[in-house]
Each structure stands twice: as C-alpha cells, then as structure tokens.
Image (tube, rainbow, N blue to C red; front, side, top):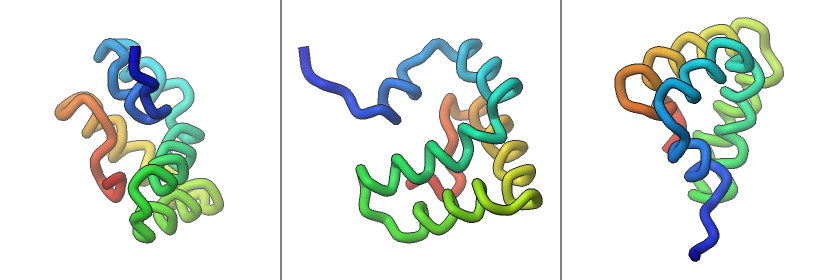
Length: 82
C-alpha cells in the first residue's frame, strides 16, 4: 500500500464527507489545505493564498465559499490550490 499525501487523502474522501467538512470546518480547511499543498507542489502562490486565507477574515470567507463551490462541482478545492 502506497503512502498518500494528506491532501490526496482529503481528495479521496467521499463527496458528501468533503461537502460536510467544508460547511462545518471550511474556514480552517481552506488555508491549511493550501499550506500543506504548497509543501507538496512547491508553488509559492499556493502558500501565499493559504497564509492570506488563514490570517485575514475576508480572505478566509472568500476561500471558504470558493472551496465549498469547487468541492461541490469538482470534488476538491481548485482555486489557488495547484
């Protein structure tokens, strides 16, 4: 069995579980997902988006809504989460 990254484990969750997690914990998941994703992809924009998402109220709310919509449509957060 191959070890999966943390973000891949999140993506592999059932769709309804990801939607419920986004509804309840989306304000935290948005920034944390992007910061962890940065360490996997080394994309600086992803890190900046994660920090902005965690440290600013407006950025947090915007990413929460974007992640909820993209999770419903695409099955995972996709905006600035390369």
